[in-house]
Amino acid sequence: MESIAASRRFGLNRIVAAAVLVIATGVAPDRALAQAAPVPAPPEPSPPGPIVKPTPTAQMQAVLDELAALGAQPVQTLTPEQARAQPSFADAVRSLLARTGESTEPEQVAAVEDGSYPGSAGTMPLRIYRPLQGPADGSPPPVVMYIHGGGWVIATIDTYDASARALSNAAGAIVVSIEYRKAPENKFPAAHDDTWAAWQWTVANASAIGGDPARVAVAGESAGGNMAANIAIRARDEGVQMPVHQVLVYPVAQCGTPTPSYERNADAVPLSVPALEWFFDHYLNAPSECDDPRITLVNPARPDLSDLPPATVITAEIDPLLSEARRYAHTLVNFGNRVDHSQYGGVTHEFFGMGAAVDQAKMAVQQAGGALRHTFTAPPPAAPQPPPATPPAPAPSPGTPPPATPPAPAPSPETPPPATPPAPEAPPPAALAPRR
Image (spheres, rainbow, N blue to C red):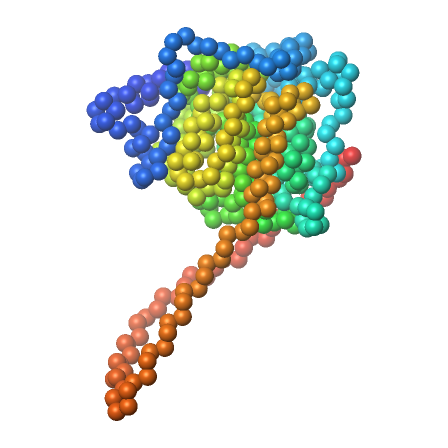
């Protein structure tokens, strides 16, 4: 199979072809694909002059140094099995805390319970986190379905435990952290299909797990951010209950096309451009799937990105995904969606769950939690008002004959409305086992 690394040549060819199109027609291809007033944001231009690589903050560098001391190797030099077994950024944070004499206990939440949901090809694990403080009036808390990262190849809900805990408390919401099938054992679109099944389960079972079924949001990091964005779009397209909010943390939004942040952060840790290519090589069946709208989100195959839920987009300065995530955020704005995008300086991919060691992570979690709380407490949209009643006709003057009543039109054959199929029965909630 041709590798994604080789396919980057085709990305460069697309850039050349775009330049030719602009010269020939005066229309940038990104503007041509929208077919309407809203247009995708243009790609971020490369800055002139030499590439200046950003510098990690002292706190971020301490985590990176700890990860190196634990012996973590670049994933592109490993097999998937080796990459799954090696130390993670979560291990580095715990090791750093232990070495500096700080507590390694996870952030406290009210309860943690393990369960399962029916994935698209079998039962999959999930974990439910309950916030320390729910609604003050005792009403059911809102729900956030959280999708972890790992490039569709590595990591689990255990690896991203810190993110789910922090988000539950920050948003005052029940967080449902879901697992999905990994590549290369399960190629594209296996993970996308599982997370869609998880969304349907979460919406159907929000009440059963003690949450408010009218206030269900979605959040994801990295590959999980990509799948969270896809859930919002697919729910809109299929008429399924949409998330009330989407939190996209450094989401994967394209592949195969070099970007300015690819250039600045080509050898960044823990995510480099060779690592990105390694992830895509394992998840995609062929390089052509880079152009699938589920991978490349700003896409002529799916030009309409309007009428989507409010989005919080969080990006890191030292991350190859910065440019594509920024472009997706700007494109959502151009299509009339409400977007809150913040870029955090001096931090790398995966920083979001490092609140115990990195201050910017705490700020990012509070940003996401605050945005979710704002959406959860916003009043629902006003119901449409009925049209005003037609005033009665004035009474005729005495002696004026009443107007002749026109003959009723001949009845025309009516086509009976199609029968509404019964709604599919919601899968039963999983038996939840308390963890601690």
